[in-house]
Image (cartoon, rainbow, N blue to C red; front, side):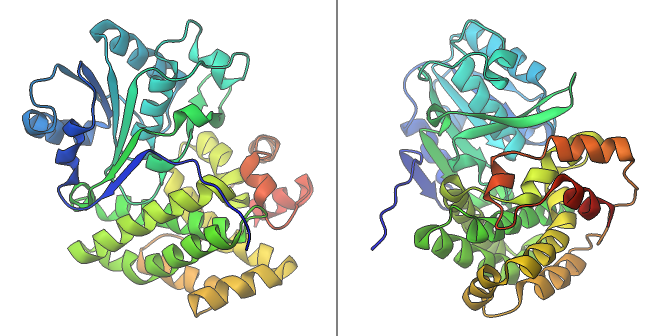
Length: 360
């Protein structure tokens, strides 16, 4: 039997109302919470139940693409209040911003120094917990944060084992009222992660079991979850968690390799970019590496390529972007697509082949 090992949060809790168990996990002292603007009102409303008897500061200035400046601002606030705990509450952006803040809060140098690997962060000394409010990114269980340098348009991961949260709490209550478009895009991100994890060069039997189960669940329940069905939301939240566990070990693929720079160039939500690219990339991959996609289809019980298109249409996501990339943009995207995700893709593409895929 093959050996495998996962590096995951010490505590993973799933279930409605589980967010109120957070206080029992946190050490004494002040808490800094990073969230998106839409989450701030709920946090303030529930703060006395979430953090009884604690000093709490909420930093709600987290955009969809996390600039290094946001991490710097959050670090300054955390230092000012003497935070012993940092909480990421929101979508992947809020959680990734909190990861980076927790990892770098005690560091002397700028976030850019660590982003570009000029410096290496010391072991984290504050407690870090992640609570997702969308079902899609899996960021609550991974050990990297995707950040964005606004001056260079480079989007890449800041990665270290120290960035894995101490606790991941997945409470479907937090995702119940997500707008249709948010649930659809984040769910398609989760589906992309599941499919890419399954077909990754680094996949094994354990990651394929998790990824295949999650993909099948997402195909079945994502449309109903976007319509507000509470039971479907739970299923999608559970599937998203499973994809995060799977790809934290297996890595992803060409969709994510291209999606990060493309999203930066055109300022598009990550989930939407994945949703539009997924069908095209899977079709191209399957034409050249059919065996792994036959395994995926066997695990799903249906043809993945065909059903991606059906699901995309149900979610009212377009088959193509409503713009044409310039040659300069394509060259930038291709040049910055050679990430760890691209290296895990089951097919190796030349720069010219990636450019053709972007033009198609």
